[in-house]
Image (cartoon, rainbow, N blue to C red; front, top):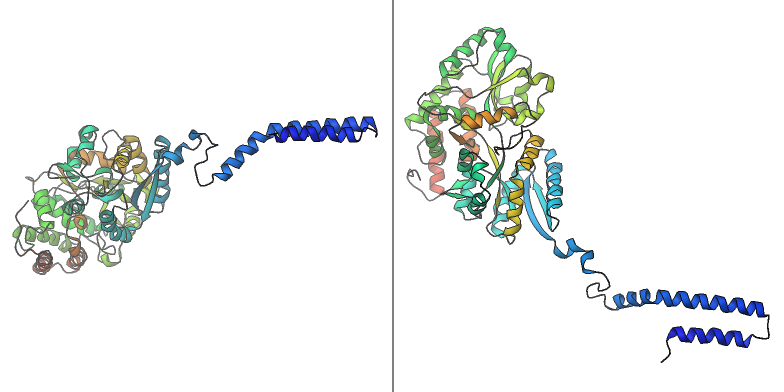
Length: 472
């Protein structure tokens, strides 16, 4: 059988023979042109032939392409990660995390799903139950323990031990992510609560930052006489007053008591809880606070502090990125004053973590991401971007003015708490915060403790419990 190349040659020769009586120069030119076309066709034919093979086998792999041409598409696996967007900067932050992770792990594609606070909390449990998300943002303490009790999280103790994270994170932080000796989360950022004060104002009035309860009351008296507000408080954000309840209880009764109380294991009519409200009442009746607290959000607390209209406020340093640079040096930070000298120093340190769904189908990939997110360099970048601190002992110093003050507080604390609304049953949060706001307005100890106890009993009943639980 003749090939199409041989047939083309014969056609050219025949054409020249038939036209031999015509102009010989023209015939020669035609022959040269024909031979050039034939040669070019012969050279291109393997390419067009391969293309026809690909076309004929479109339903199969591209066999004309070498196997290594598409390595990521062939080997890539997707890890679904859920995150909470609490500020506009979170989206770009996690996009940067994704890019850096994929540079180190080109065989893994990170797929971030971000929601705002309320929507995220509603989606969390369904995500865990379905296994739709592999790795998820969450919060340490009671909220983490609640998911563990529902058997929704994958234990991470083996990862923690293999990576020697005991040398990377303080024991107080490890306790926040552990339940019954098992680790269930990797911490990556935190912020501290404490008293922020205007240094020039206190210096002008010859007042030292109060270290104990008596000094705090004397400070209130002196600043009030100077026509200033001693302490700015607000209930415009309903969760703000809870910091006062937390800290007075921590300083009076300690961490174990406070956590048991919030877990529903102790009655709010207990004398030790009544003492918390009695101390809070002392501050209110000493005119330590502003009277317009219902209108004051956490953002509203800052301008009066800058302008020496108030001496101090109890706040978390999540506001670090909101402080003008030229004003930051005028603000000092101090831990909440001592009340009971026999009680060790415990601090409110809300801590953000990542967890792995027990139903994940990509546990090995998830462990790679957790090892990545636990690196001090990565934690430092995240913390600096959101104005918080990394709990990693080798993380670099944060950029924020007040974030740099977190590490000494963390180092000196004997134990850490996670804030009232992260520790109490979620069914109690809204009503409890309303009781705190009402107490600032009318400091009735009997009414406040009775209302909180009623909430506790209602919550226990809904949880099929009818008595005070023993400490677990």
